[in-house]
Length: 425
Image (cartoon, rainbow, N blue to C red; front, side, top):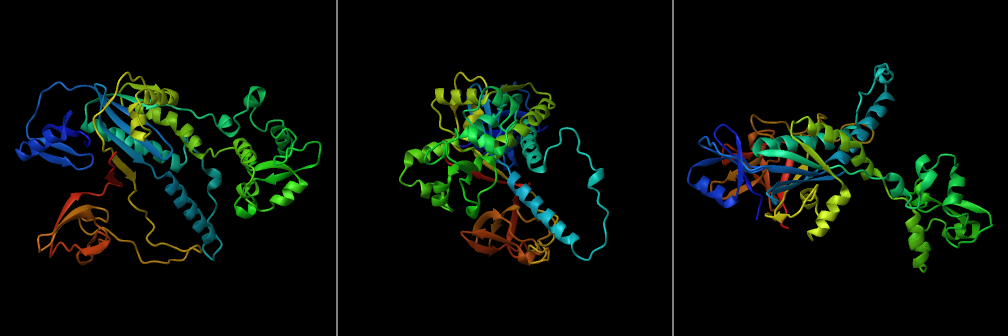
């Protein structure tokens, strides 16, 4: 079963979401019209004075994907997974910085540096992290317009990055941090018990060794360093740890448990959790919190599978939960494009033609219905909008001309910076 359908009356007041079959009857009987495709919303032709049942909006914020669920009377009636584009934003900013740096080395006019007089506001977050907060907040506000939401629940999880890096850390070492009072060599000697990581020999000269060799992309991060005696270090050379310890699975497992995992995703959630919580409180609805451990406990107790939207439904206090849907809406943040008119190569010189511009009311990315002269119907995204003769949509891997002058072209859904799909569960 797909998500329940949002219902508005003629004054755009949100009513109780209804079953898709009920919405179909209202549309067929000309008692309602489609108001919005994503999320699917209908609007009635009359004003309705009715008591609405309370609906709770639950959020499971994540670094890459945020789970969203609407729960009414312990029933999940609508769910979605919102995929962020924080990594794409960071990549674009890195590319822009590289282009600007190369531009400064060319014979261009002198521009006085401005970085010395710039200050960051309190609570500032990098654009890639700010995007996660703003995108989630956008969808919360959007759902409040379409559904009678009376409360919000957020998973306010905090990842302990020191324990993630070093599971055996404790006591004063935990309080003071990983390297406080230690040099790198001394820290490694303590961590690896002054023994060779591979052969476990002690009381011999030890060398700092890269677990992932630099020749294969290894870094200087402390999580990639260990201690090894000279013979082991020479035998390993530029081999990967799996290749070097191929015949010693126990040693390989022991070494891997000592290595630190990446903290990028955990740091992103830690950095944005409070800002999202404070922004949600400003909406005027009561906001409750739940821990990550409680979410996992609820999901395990109810014998539910692991998914972002299911985790969202299990946030907070949950006694019983009935899943009324099996097709969560998959929302992916795509943005509206960039202001950069041409793509450039690594030297900063143009390497492509100008990007597509909107033509009248049409934009690249609009979802349209194409009806050809033969009566064939196609629904997909508009690819090109330079001029009517260049309109195209993709159908089964092929590009089909969609000239509105020769074919019937109807806009189904205007581009809003997101792409929408469904996944059968």
